[in-house]
Image 1 (cartoon, rainbow, N blue to C red):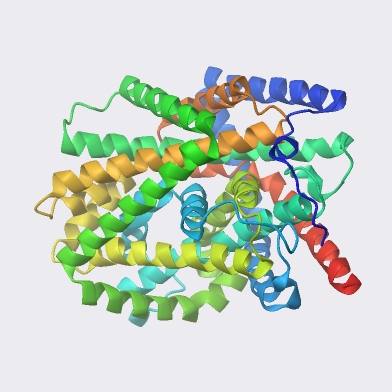
Image 2: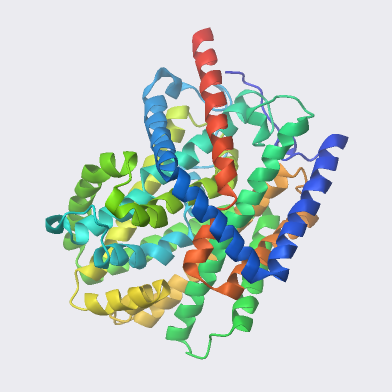
Length: 499
């Protein structure tokens, strides 16, 4: 593996070729027109995209599940192989960030507000509405948690890990820029390969906008239940999204060290505090026991849910498992390059195992502490009723049972906002790299386009539609990611054979 150091200016495309500038201008115009159509015709645009994604996942659902399972096996296999000893950037490469900062940044960029949104809602929904393939005798809290773990566990993080490793390997090891196209060519003028970078940008905007819209819906519900029930207008949602946009744009302009790193550390600490409060108030031993038993169920169902779609539960699998797995692919174009950017100096083994296993363990603890705890309490029927009525209601109905429920609700709202800030400013950072315009004005432009699409989704304000729109850009990018992994494996094999 070459020990050539890649400068930040080169990684971020600060001196693009004339051809690169032409691609950048053309791509920005195309993306701007696309976002403008969504704002001008939100109902038609969102409906058309949702219909397109539904058709694709119905036809290729099992292929998408098998693809994500393949990435899990590859991540484990590469980490255990001799390749795992290779260091990203060469044997002398130094780590830029401490392990704590590194883990905090990759976790908050990769999951973020989704854990807050679905921490109660998803386990409760699966408990109350189990898929048909779950036997009657097995239905319960553990199985509801196990199904949730499948959507948020090793499959999700393996997608991120392989996407990030491909970028890091070619960027740090082969002296290339941190572009998606750099996995396919080392030429400075990438020509038609630049189209892949723009497909990634579209996937980023759709993926983050869907999550952004869902986060705003949850923040609004929390403010209604905590402060005033009058907070419910479309104008309020638009005002809130603009305020958050100012915050995440500012954080992105401040950069990795002053903006994203500090916010990520704050998010991780606040999450730990909230988990500790819930654990201590409910019952730490009960929660940890439930975590162990539900992980056992997760491992037991993993072979089945990872390799097939049960005919009797087909619609459930399409609506939940397939959409989730593609949603992670939608985020991979920015989480992958972002994780790559902060991972110089890590070995392949450390990169893969930490990216896959550490955030997975944190996610499992979160769902067990919140969703599992809520289902084990006497007030579980009220929480189930709230979730069945509206996904955004469950978390705050749960907090109402605590003595300092209002304080916890406000902490959750703060965490939602700071999580979406870290995810969005990471996305803006990567859009700047991929478009060869990492200037402040460039980030302002990407922020404006992201907010524009999010506003179109907020106009409809449908959580399930937001999920479908979020994965629209990921459907073509799935093929790109598959090709990236193929190029990575070929280069790793050549490197290993030459040693």
